[in-house]
Length: 299
Image 1 (tube, helix red, strand yellow):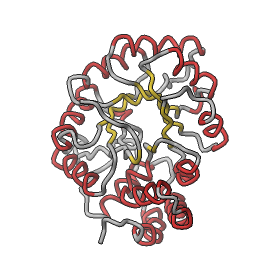
Image 2 (cartoon, one colour; image 1 turned 60 degrees about the horizontal axis):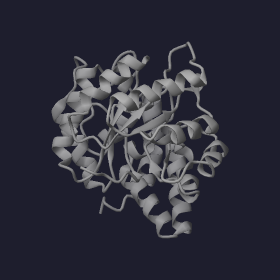
Image 3 (tube, helix red, strand yellow; image 1 turned 30 degrees about the vertical axis):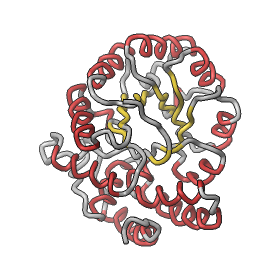
Image 4 (cartoon, one colour; image 1 turned 180 degrees about the vertical axis):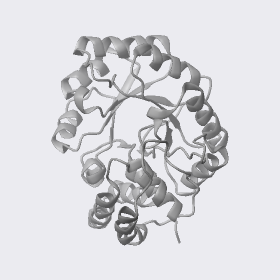
């Protein structure tokens, strides 16, 4: 099925039971929650979903569940976080049997940084062996791909349809926006500056803020698309204050906490990630009600 990738695409958390196995009922609940919030797509197996901890079988089962719940209404993106070309392809082939709109794939992220040519070869082999579009998840600090390399990848590899730009530097994203080949996509994961990213023409976002407060992010997207920039700026201010409370090394745990506060089952994070601390919870609670007032689905 052909899918249009745009707008708010939250990377879902992966709910774990106390024994750290996936809580499939809770995962279905999370997908349904996102559908109620009017999101434009969902992603599973990303950083917010603790995708780095998932086995190939767990990722495939998560995608299967999501596709069953979505039933083609919105696109499903499969996140792949792996340390080798071989493993990336293994995971991609495992999810390719389902109605997956695209793969979100990190560059190799272990301590040994590949050269630009090696990175190009990595994505070339992936797109040749798996017939699914690839969005490069440009997130790894010590293997961060420059705008020039990203353009090279998008120009040279038809299977690479875009990039998810995750550094906090909006200048890098702006450079990418003015240099991408026609028809390619740029998704922002600059959580603190979603409004600015949308105003610059980003095609959408796959990021933690949309995973935590999807209704608010849909409202922000809609305001920018409608040219309602005064409203969008107010949402941005509230969303930034909220982001400053959840951003931490245990960000996925904090997203789970926020979703639980909204009545969604999320379970625990996988070890060694710690759960939200009491101090973090207090700071989050201070801003959560204020940001959720922008959720137009809550009424």
